[in-house]
Image 1 (tube, helix red, strand yellow):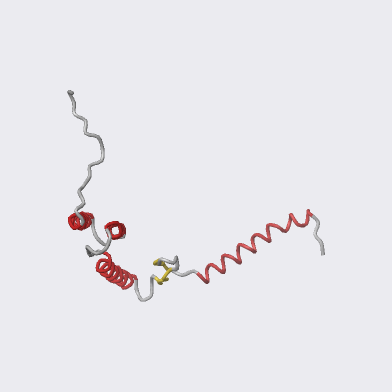
Image 2 (cartoon, rainbow, N blue to C red):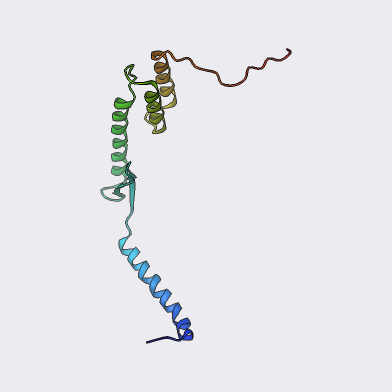
Length: 132
């Protein structure tokens, strides 16, 4: 059964309408209020927003972040003279970026790290004196 181009043109609107209706119906039945927390391997943990409730979900996520922060701080936030400087410096930067430690804590830990490894802060820039 072949359609002529004229017949095809007349029926194309019906085809697109039925296709969009089918897609809309599938979306309606499969849609859920969810949100994801991503993991390192780009897999997500799916949470339904209304089950058990939005407040309990937020409480769970705050508890999860708090536990994560304490584990990361214990594992990577301790200054150790037996580890190399660059590794510890990078770890402190990651902790700051993940908001495990704030900027003041980062500066304090960085000073402690520099003190243990006898690192001096280096000024970068030009020292220009006028009138010479």
